[in-house]
Length: 218
Image (cartoon, rainbow, N blue to C red; front, side):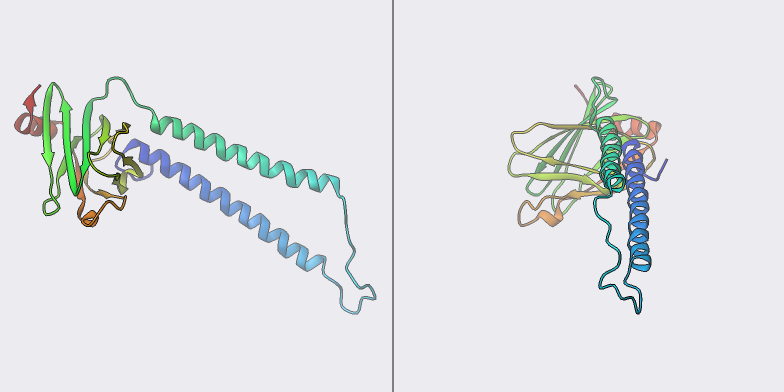
């Protein structure tokens, strides 16, 4: 799997790599055809003809130039739709639920796990840290009391707007331990640049210890 903090990041990275490979292949073919046409269909030196031989209404080539792009777009659409359906799917019973509240100008994270709730509230001067267990499905419920924010962890290769009055939910499956930087990706006011946070993905035993110490029974 490509490098990434979540299973979904691997899917996105694979789709991105495939799109680049296909684009480069198309570019090579197009440039090859352009150079071939320039080399073999130019006006010859000392030729009495005013123009090189002209070819019109070549039906097989016209059909080829029409069907190949349609097939390419269909293939891109198929893989994009398949991966998007996987990425945006949410389960009924995730391992961890996190309510994310973006406000001017920081974050409040409320985690629910094993019947316990842990909350972390940040300020522009003190970025909050969201702790998650590795190898678990984590469902995020996003909300905002003021303006539009955007929850973005670059290592997840995923971001989602936090919109007042709109329920945005997404789910990830953590795949590797580490500490990953996060930020607001929507210009939301004077201290937008200070809406920073971190996500720390830890082994299960360490998360159990954390939730027992920081959590309160529901």
